[in-house]
Image: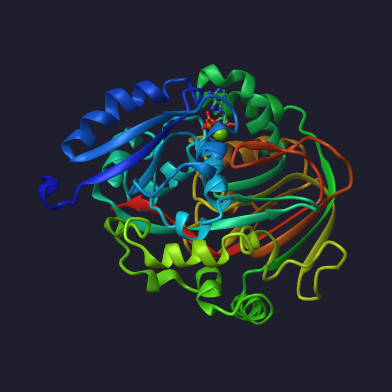
Length: 409
Ligand code: ADP
Ligand code: MG
């Protein structure tokens, strides 16, 4: 089928590229494989090259987004993570987070791009770039849930995974093998599984049963109502935060609200400062740090080889951690390998995970959950959040009540 380019409205995109992603080929991938297709699609763009870690986070926080219909990344998940955290750090984050985002794989951990294409029945590893560019050009959108990760003094949002234990070690320690691209995960995995470390902690979680989903919906509403009464006269604001975003209009990116938005300006004038980071603090299911988790949560204490929370179907070629994960099903997949299993099974797990077959292993727990709290008993290893390092410390997470939009077809 020929793409009906002529019926697509013109679009202007902000393209962010991480030249350090993967095998350092992201910029070439853009010039060689992306530009020719975009040109045919009547799309114009401006390129920003990431200069260093956190460059894109700071850039997105403050750039004038009103001239862009979309933001497209050519990178691994790490740059998308920076971009989305940047969007949510803006005073106009409610509108900014609705800008449809395109993901083109240029890194070694391309969980978002691979998982999107996997769900569309398109190739993941083989020519995922072309398929991803077509998603960008076609310009329909899919909602993607965002997970809030909260520590005692900070919060970030995460799009693909939160890991502690052997897989986090693989992702983080393979940084030095960056020049190998994705193979770094396979090699480091084999090496790590020869003598895998155990990690001690207390893990609590709320299972994603139908009953608990109803509770989550109620808790979200209660939070919205509380915000309504206490802080704002204008309940439109909490609608933005806590309700379905369908009233924004069409699911097409051709309706970028930033381009023709009175709502945006209302919000900016009335509430910008008071509502800056509500999404960080006004949680639905998470207790405050001085509270215990409530009685309907389950708790496991002990040693683990793997504690993983994954919310996309594939993190990389070597890491299909939660094959049933969907972009927008309000589910976090908890993956556990407990410390009492024979060590050789860790190797078995890592190999089976390449094709997602670990889900059938009796020694692996795969639990759909809505929220979790992890208290490490020792400061050991680091967490990997969307492939990025985070210091090991108490952390809890839940699914945010609003989502972002990913360009798709
Ligand atoms: P990969 O999939 O290879 O891990 P990512 O896009 O996830 O690629 O990015 C990896 C890391 O590179 C992220 O931590 C990001 O902040 C960092 N980064 C961004 N720009 C640069 C740069 N110019 N030089 C080095 N690192 C960078
Ligand atoms: Mg990465």
